[in-house]
Image (cartoon, rainbow, N blue to C red; front, top):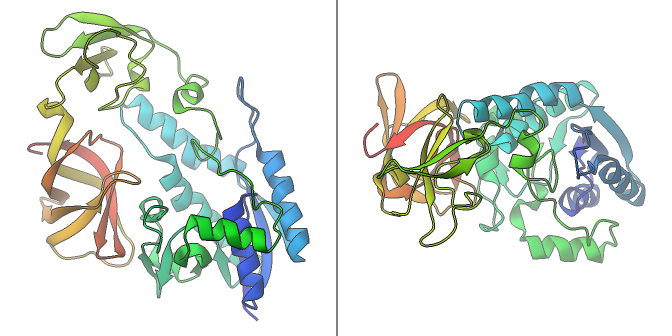
Length: 351
């Protein structure tokens, strides 16, 4: 019998994942990954409640249950990475790094070493012979967050929810009487629950007031608490009031200045060319050509042409995209198969 270790977070998705695998005849063990336990001002970390919920479901299902402690590695590989990227003025995605470094590396390695044949998670995605494919529910598809996983890891991974929609998952969990069937989905950053990124960063970086400057006139319009807290295209949180809304179109980390405009057509807000770094291909490097790309989670798939030039990976977009920020990830698709992607090094009309 194939032994599968299921990452159980205490939510409905991973709970149903475990239940389905039990029904399919696998020898299932539930594993809670203890990644983050720190409380923050005004926000109690829910890890203990999540662990208790995961345990309750494991008891319901009659499966073994373990806790894997990855907190030290998580802080180093995911949290520190995110903070360092923000300090550089970039816009990182910690969930992508969490999947690369923790769930499909640390967890996979620890599970195999402990006797598992495979691992499973509650991600909305599909896997086929080491290939990553989009979920049946396009609205819930999570392949954007999984593009840095290796084909080797995927060959030892199961995604039982890939064929279902979120409403179907809720119904199936309720039909099975799972303890977590009605539990709300967690929001926000993967490791800090309901708290926002700004509130989280203030615990680790010094707030440095600076000027908010109109890009076109050079006029100082207001003050901010630190350029680190702002990202390209941002509209909210500027506190400039009155008239047309302002959008962030740039920042200077050395001068601690944020540049804004009311012009939605400003060239700094739009990109038709993207240069990628830290490129990762799930299986093998594709050839040059036209593919579909996604520049952020839930973004519509857009057409782009892939080039390899001067040891760099470049994309020419069929239609200019708004607020393409360095540090974000671009994921490249061939129909419903994820080829891989990379982190945006630079973007603009020409790169």
